[in-house]
Image 1 (tube, rainbow, N blue to C red):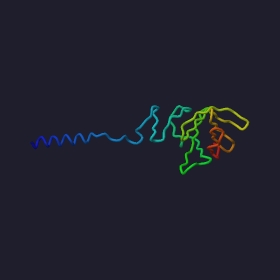
Image 2 (cartoon, rainbow, N blue to C red):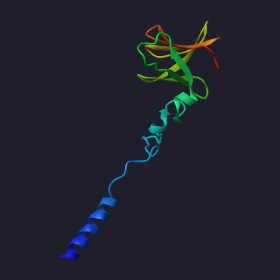
Image 3 (tube, one colour):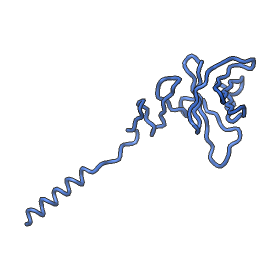
Image 4 (cartoon, rainbow, N blue to C red):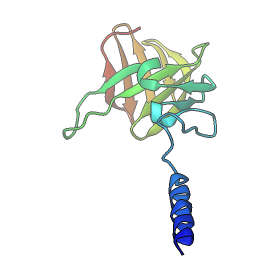
Length: 135
């Protein structure tokens, strides 16, 4: 009887040692191999994983709403013909064109302008984000 209890106790200890452990931070990967828990996302214009807050140009809201302030980040393709803008609403890929005011990147409802002293992001022709020092 004592032998059965002892074996049951040993089996219980072995099973509890095999319980599933939470994945380690940074051990997660998306379908492109990026690590979301480290801020990594796939950039369509660079075809690689990036951390927009580190690799991009930071733009701040012109009129922040509420207590939370969400920045936007711009990543340019190697040749500069495309810009990818990461916002709280998603990522947008824009194509470059030239205007008398300088280069701009657009899609149907978004425009990114590079002015001599600023980057500006427009949504439906309304200035929403700006960076005061052009790179």
